Picture 1 (cartoon, one colour):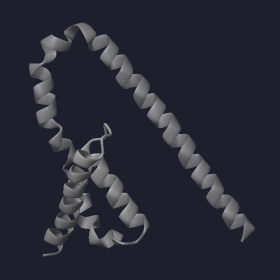
Picture 2 (cartoon, one colour):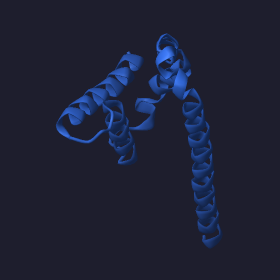
Picture 3 (cartoon, rainbow, N blue to C red):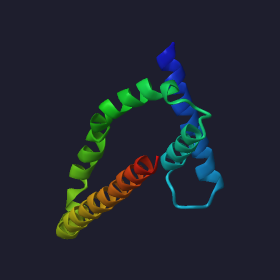
Length: 121
């Protein structure tokens, strides 16, 4: 019953994300709206982490399997992207490196600010 409730919370927030996507005219996917809403509710402690953690852990553990259909459809559309494959790989590599760099810098800032707070106390 616990897992059904946790999946229900996540599914309900995904549904609210779908509604927000149809109401708000921004180019943001509905799943992003749902996850931002979940994040806000977790930060505000409206939803406790233990209310969704087991279902979220399961979804994260099977996340790689969900990319199989996307990969298969990419293989079927390869002739359409053959001429742009070098540019696509360049974008993937550059955006991955930028993401790593920005994530590292943000994490370092958070760690540094935590150390400053602990020294002040």
